Length: 351
Image 1 (tube, rainbow, N blue to C red):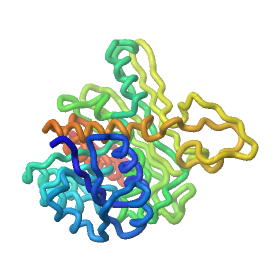
Image 2 (cartoon, rainbow, N blue to C red; image 1 turned 180 degrees about the horizontal axis):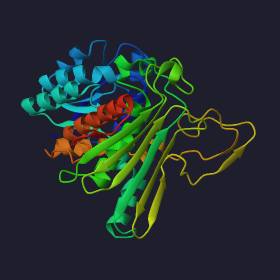
Image 3 (spheres, one colour; image 1 turned 90 degrees about the vertical axis):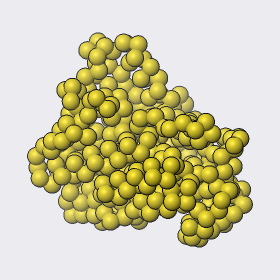
Image 4 (cartoon, one colour; image 1 turned 60 degrees about the horizontal axis):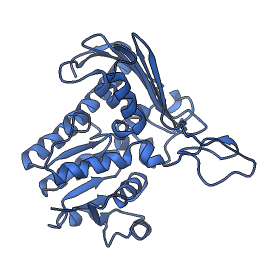
């Protein structure tokens, strides 16, 4: 195999950046897309020859090697299991599923069918965070003690994000799952699991700060304690105006390190009339802004999908953090954090 033939399920935001990243890789051919809407526009934009309204028709094709799952959260399980049963490698956007039981089944079926399962966590491929980890490995900040990280913005435009049944929760499962995965890789590992979590959320609906029509929370934080005593503080919220703010702070015995993933552009613009696009979730482009140079590259999407394609071509399993086991662990931790928030106390275990 010299090229991976891909089918995309979905046609909105996530599908768009998957298609963009594939278009930059000469080892990929996107041959089909399945979705319930936006099909003519999406397929024309990315020159995808075949379209289907039923994703099962796409999965029935023998010439497709892998499937990008870019549908709302509640559909991840069904599409992933069906793709695995059809002997397609699975590339699933976060979260792996909306429940632990569904995530466990995805991992189990992919193993049974002998297909690779890739958990799409772009933070682990963001160039700035890769460089940060290299600096840490050199010993620049000594022993890492504490991580503080967040993904926050002013709210999802998807109607599926408003319902717990279709999203799985609120800002915690939708946004804070990114810094959660990074914490597992930076601080954790097979020999250093999380052993205690403390979660706090706004509570959903009338209890929310801003988004009273969201069943899930519009603000959430979590504290993770690892077996070796290291700590991580993660945050996700829908109450942050001014653009999506992804930021990481890492504290060590000999130094500290800060990373601005979304506001780290080397370009500063002051504009009275405004212009087309600066960064994701920005209300406007008036006054001073820091427009992204290549958002899909800087957030890790391009390298992430290139890595997955190389794994398929070279018959390699994905590394820790972007494998099915990590995706399952993230869901287990999210649910433990929700439990802690409901009960108002720490939840102990081993994840």
